[in-house]
Image 1 (cartoon, rainbow, N blue to C red):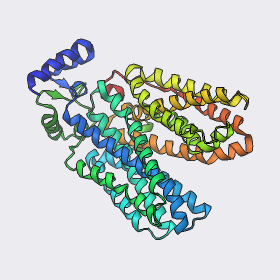
Image 2: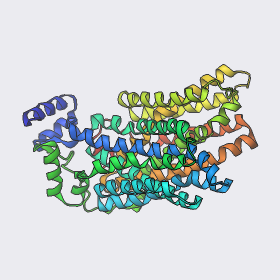
Image 3: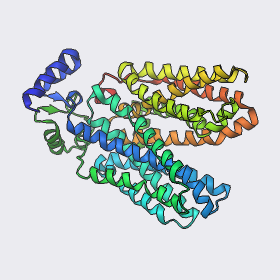
Length: 463
C-alpha cells in the first residue's frame, strides 16, 4: 500500500468521522485507530484466534480423555473433580500474574511465554504417571491460558482500528467454540481406540500450540505500551514498519501515561473504579448461568424431557456456534450498551419462562431454551470487547486479567452449585435463581456500562 493510498483512506475516514478529521488535521497523519486493515492486522488476529482455538481444543479434550484414563488409572470422585477443574484454577492464577507482568514487561514477552508454557505442558501430558501429575500439568496449561487471555485481548485491541475492533475481539468466542467442538469430535471417535488413546488425545493439544508459538516469534511490541513507557523511538519504529510513515498514535499522539503507575491498585483509583467493577460484575453475571447450564446440559435436558436421544444436545451445541456468529454481526450493527443490556434482558426473561412453564409445555420450554442459548452465545462475544476497551494502556492487561479471574471464579461457583440447586430446590427454582443473576448483570450494565463503539482506544479507555 502506497502513502498516497493511505492518505486517500484517511480522507475517506475523515468524511464520516469528525473526531478522526480533527485528529488527523492536528497531526498531519492518520491515527492508528483509523488505519485501514492490512496484512499485519490479519497476522495479529490470526495469532490470537489460533491461540483461542488451541485453548478451546485443550479444554475440550479432557472430558473424553478422563473416561478413557479411568480404565487404565482409576480415579475417585476427588481426582475427577480436581483434574476437571485444574485448568480453571490455572486460568485464574495466570490471568492475574501475567496480566500484571504484561503491563510491566511488555505484551510481546508474555505473548510468547504463555504459549511456551502451554506447548510444553500439553506435550508432557503424554507421559503422566499419576492423577496428581496430570492435575499439575493441567494447572500449568491453564496458567499459560490465563496469561494468553489477558495479553491476547490487550495486544489485539491495541493494534486494531476502531472500525473493526469489535468484530476482531468479538470473534474470540467463535474460534474458541470451534476448537472445543473439534476436540469433542476427536474424543468421540478416538478416545477409546486403544488403552493409551487418552494420552494421544491430551498431548495432541501441543500440536496447534506449537504452531502458534512458532508463528508468534518476531511479533512486535505494542507501540501504545512502548509509548506509555517513554520508549518513543521504538514505538515510532513499530508504526513505521507495519503501518507506514504517516501513521501516528491516536488522540494526542499516544496513550500519555508514562508518569502514571500501573498495577492492580491503579484499577481502583477514582477514574477507573467504576469500569473495574463493571467489567468484573457483568463478566461474572454472564458466565455463572453460561457455564452452569452448559456444563450440566444433560441434566437440564432431562429436566425438560429432552434426554430421549432426539439429538437435542447436538442441536443446542449448534445453536451455540450459530449464536456466536450472530453475535459478531450484532457487535457491528448495535451500540455496545444496547447489545449488552438487551441480551441480559432476553436471557433473563428466557430463564424466567423456563422456571414458570409447566413441565407439560414441552414445545414452549424448547423455544425458551433455544432463545436463551442463541442470545447467551451471541452476547458472550462482548467479554472479549469491553475489558480491553475500558482500560488505559498502562493497566489494560491487568484490567482484562482481573475480569477474567473473577469470571473463572464465577464459572466455578455456577458449575458447583447448579446440580446442588436442582437437587435441593428443583429445576424451576434454580432457573429463577440464574435469572436473578442475569437481572443483576442487566442493572449493573444500565448503571455503569460505557459506550465505546465509535471511540478511539484512548477515548474508550477514558484516557
